[in-house]
Image (cartoon, rainbow, N blue to C red; front, top):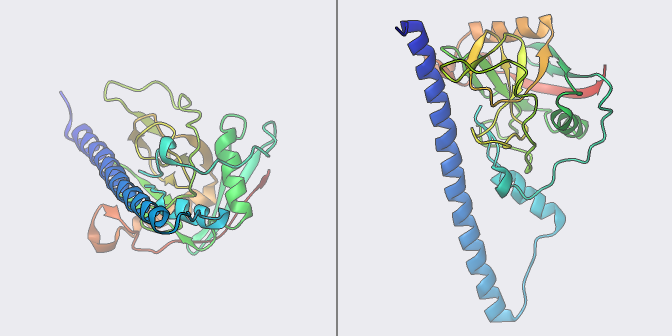
Amino acid sequence: MVSSDQRRRQLAREKFERQQQRREEGRRKTRRLTVIIASSVAVVAVIGAGAYVSLDGDDAKKKDSADAAASPSASPSASESSAPEPAMKIDKEAKYSMSMKTSQGDIGIAMDAAKTPHTTNSFKALADKGYFDGTKCHRLTTDGIFVLQCGDPKGDGTGGPGYTIPDENLTALGKAGDDGSVTYPAGTVAMANTGQPGTGGSQFFLVYKDTKLPPSYTPFGTMDDAGLKAVKKIAAAGVTGGAADGAPKKAVTVEKAAVDKA
């Protein structure tokens, strides 16, 4: 017999997955419309002037960034992401750490570079150019799933870097149970995605209490004690409007993020 607590967690997970799917479907419809409009404009330009206009490199990157969707749910699908992920520059044999100075306290994250080289390399490349600086942790969940989600430059769950990275380390938390989930222990830091393989971008979530989720979110780091304590304090203040899923009542801004060899 399924207990009420198990049923509640199951419903929370199902809601979590439905939100991801709806956001991805909406993003795809918007992208298709954009492509249709752009194609129509291009045809008119060719007919009227016998010439075409292409985006330069910077404009193309801006468009990719604007189109990129993310959420615990997050990022565009790999097939629709045109920008390449950053070239591999980290030392896969070394240990790395991510430090985040936030408006609610400092959070240190030990990163497993050997098991998650693509994720670690991407985070270092983004942090080195100040990508995370000034961004908000836009989503807090306090029932069934216990995470704080960050890494979206748009602050609404739809932003990303314009490229995707492969899933990594998915077997680290063990084999999924009968309910299709594994436990992400408190302190775990994992990639958000759209619910589809290979759709991680820049969004990630911080687990502040043991949470059951499908083993499809790359676990790439662990918070230090001070960081976990800070996130628990944010969670204790609740969600804006009294809901169980939404913007944290204690607004969280990442003032500075850096990834360095430990």
